[in-house]
Length: 601
View 1 (cartoon, rainbow, N blue to C red):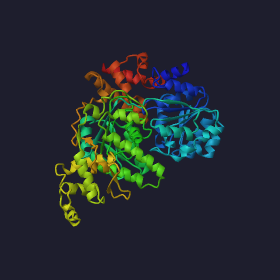
View 2 (tube, one colour):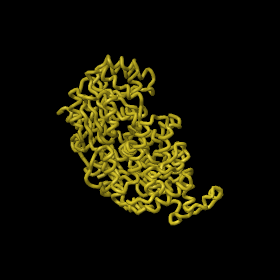
View 3 (cartoon, rainbow, N blue to C red):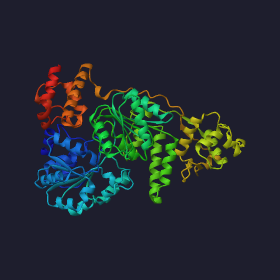
View 4 (tube, one colour):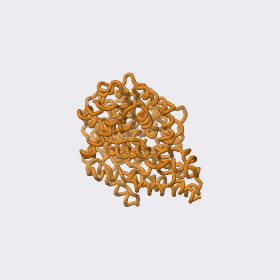
């Protein structure tokens, strides 16, 4: 472990290990299998990179992220680590060259996609080489219950059979108890050391809004909090991605679309611009983001409801990997609630699978309609307890008001029943608010006792009520996809006179404006003079990154530049004391950054 500590400082530029890194590294060095759950930005990669440098042979990293392997290799090479990848982007000559380096023992780390690893020729090649370890990244992909299921991952248990003496480490940032069990079973990790770190990301501020005009709400959020910052906006559909990206560009921001319907070259170009330019917003479906190492993403916004809490946690975790303040913002509405339930119900999956998916959807809806601390609920989903409200979510900063919605609920449920449980929310709302039209009149629903009994609430307010009634299980939607509302068993006691009357408390229909005062992440704790220095160092970093065609954060992350701007090192020894500056980077960049600092002081 002394060797590991030296590598941490000289190669990576860090003084001490975080979380369970030291224990994980020690287990791998001694040949033990490991399963580790660590939040995004928690330093998972160091857990296998350091043992790969210590153990004899090459560390094999299995990752589904072909599009990011070049950046991962660039980052390793910047540190002086001999790294390469084998995937379909290389021509035959380049592949042969890397295979020769591997066989000669001249690679520290090799990145492979699971499909490439499972090819008989690759397995035969690896059997002729000395392998230090296998690192199975994004291990949640093995789970059929998960949001990123890849069937190839379920075949990776063969590594245990083909390479019984080579330690394996499975890593993920997202897995509930069910998914953890499946990772262990599918990858034959029954005897592995298991390390579960805290899932908490205290630097992320969580905010969830019911949507009115969601585009305008998004723009207000970006303008007020992240006018110059990089961010990710997730949309449910490709059409939504295209529309939001175009709209943000018209508003004056650089916003690039990313979805599976775009040409591969366009996707790659947009991803590279997001990674390498400052202040770019990527608008994407969930096809984007897994494995993105960009540390200075200051916000992740969702324009629709994610399918489950695992997906939400994974996607929001792409913000603030550097530990500086970041936002997870979401806007959702009744259509999202109905759509998610229908998506599961109309799938070809078995009933058991559907039940699990419905449970996951209910948990996600519960998080949205919560009136207490969102972080407490989010962590509890992953089996982690915190005793105090976090103070850094919308419900903590602006506690939502609740109201006794029992009568409104009875009116809504009664109207659904009296219209025959044959219509969607908008039609029922029209009846409740006394909106007479040809369709309502032809059905004689303007003669119902429930016609216009809900005039005290606007149509928008009723949509919020119906959304919450679906979320709380008083109403369900039909399985045919028309959004028809049906009463559930839970609804009937409210419609019948009972000796023990039931009270329904819902979130207030109008939410107060968030009072949270944002601090620019790059300017945190910096004086105006230090901030000017920080901007100069960013400019130098951008020039060097462009010359080498690598993302700026691969040279130094913002957190390292912030410390340089504050400390203003004047010697190489002082530069080495800056977190994130190792020997290779000092040799490569030390003179340039020291010169920039000295010339500016």
